[in-house]
Image: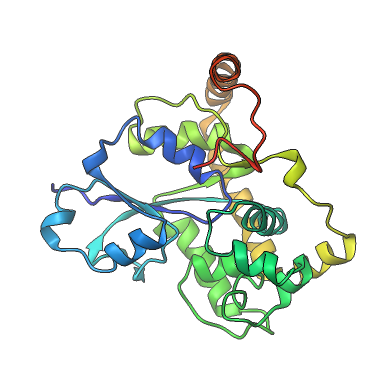
Length: 280
């Protein structure tokens, strides 16, 4: 394989499970290297070069080993990623990890009755980096003082989003992002069902005080997300009205697809009652 493999720099709780289902329609099983579970982390801590030769797509909650130019497993990669409003992402992550038994944080969060505020402020190794500008860290690989605004990392994250990564999408504008990503990756199919979504009964109300604390502790992430949204808007605007019509057409087609999938699922499976809808 001559072209650099793609790398899905998957920020947690940004529609990644939905997107990965779409990616499987284009990339073959042997062309994808997936690193999400603890077993996969152990198995693929190191990989022989021959194993990577056939890989066209690497996906996982992994940091890059080098960001500019981007490399992982000692290979140059073409990076794509999705961002989400940081406070909403943190709330979703906390509630998902506390609700879904098949994750490594479930017992810790529930046995200790860890609150959302503690999830943000805790300095336990399992919590230390989660609620304090994780997005800025994720997009740079840089360490910084958790108690101060990370100026250097923030500027580097902005640079990476605009100039280093091959594609940057926004979860809140998923359909537009998906159409653009389809062109970037050459996707064969784009229709989707929303997957790995918290069921309504799994969602808790978060106090305004805790939401404000989340905004304060993640000030760099909030600004980085605003920058990414502006960058995305400028790129979409440059495509003109034809792209807007294309998005609308896709939304109509996908709405029919989702309705059909829901009907089939209801007939075959019945009502879904778990904490997560269409889990991974």
